[in-house]
Amino acid sequence: MRTEPSPGNLPAREHLPAGNAGTPVLDVVIPVYNEEKDLQPCVLRLREHLARTFPYAFRITIADNASTDTTPLVAARLEAEMPEVRAFRLEQKGRGRALRTVWSASDAPVLAYMDVDLSTDLNALLPLVAPLISGHSDLAIGSRLARSSRVVRGAKREFISRTYNLILRGSLQARFSDAQCGFKAIRRDVAQVLLPLVEDTGWFFDTEMLVLAERAGLRIHEVPVDWVDDPDSTVHIVRTATDDLKGVWRVGRALATGSLALDRLARPFGDDPRDREISDVPKGLARQLVGFCVVGGLSTLFYLLLYSGFRTFSGSQVANALALLVSAVANTAANRRLTFGVRGRGGAVKHQAQGLVVFGIGLALTSGSLAALNAATNDPAHSTELAVLIAANLAATVLRFLLFRAWVFPDRRDESPSTVVASHTPAVPAGPASPVYATAQRSPYSTTPEPYGSASAPYGTTAYGSTPYGTTHSPHDHQTWGDATMQLQPVRPNDHDPRDAR
Image (cartoon, rainbow, N blue to C red; front, side):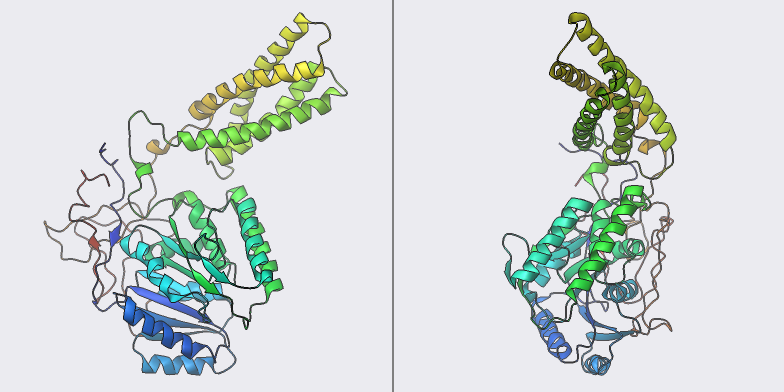
């Protein structure tokens, strides 16, 4: 069944046509620190592989993290000898700082990075970036923990890697399989909006980027890789693990308190079927039901434990009221954040007050059930009381969900203008025949990276003059990436047709 896209939907994602129009499609960054021996073999091998297998123009960027050996000289020599290589020098250490700096200044529409030891087999590079070039995905990562990956490494690193990813799954609800593999890629338009939200400048940088991207609803593509451990790696395992755990705590706390405005970033990059208006299908109902059931199950256990504790020093009615009151406050807070996605403190008091009204209804149901039980028998067993309360709570739970969805946390997205980020429009002459994609209001995370060749970013000579990201244009404004930029074309000629519900 074909449906009409809702007004305000972004256009279908764009892909890049093969060919060389002056600006590289892919910019591969190699962060290095005191790698004078490995740098040249790495760059030569990577350049040969890209020239042989990659059908687009590319660039290799050496990001020197304040090396103290001859690494800067090796990088400068490689830049002078090969036109596809650029060297960038940072005076401060930090892999995350290097990636943020180079990615923010790059004019390539697809950005990637890999470790200088080339532990990951390069045959995975094209599968890594292909979904980004086609517009299918927003980020891509190499995974050493996928079923079809082939990995050679010691038991110590294997244990640490799997333990770390289990920590991410348990604490931050991460669904990607491998956060630490040094083989990742991101679309430039995504990076421009996502990078300002990432605080870490070290090894936790890409983990934080992936967690925020996943929470924002962006699509992450995983590629199984062949990976061989580098026995000469200079990574300090204990210090890196400590910094990563601190980062997990910081990001988890920010997500729990709602201090990250991820709702402004959610799904801005292309047509998302979840944004379409389909009659008789409530938005987010399945996800809300799952979240509500999980929260409800935990709340019921919490309530029963409280009731059993209060019952030791009070009557059944008092114990029930106290247990229900405490569990109701916790239930409302959990459903507010996890089930209905309301972040921040705005409206929290009102929501709790409405939740107490819902609590009153539940209290009436459970208290009435206890009253009926006491009327039926003078001294009911404790197990019988619990069974009656469970049945009453199930009925109250159904009613609570309906009231939460319709009254406490109604979906008001259609009542306020949405904040989305504009997609790049094709750099073609304005005219009646050229497809013009609609853009929305400016994102608060709009950034304008400094072009290569500026005083503060002496990266090279290529300059790009893109319009500030997310700006609203008139129908005849066309956003470009500079004088010599590869044009973005629709995947199919009719992708801009509003009748196409792809």
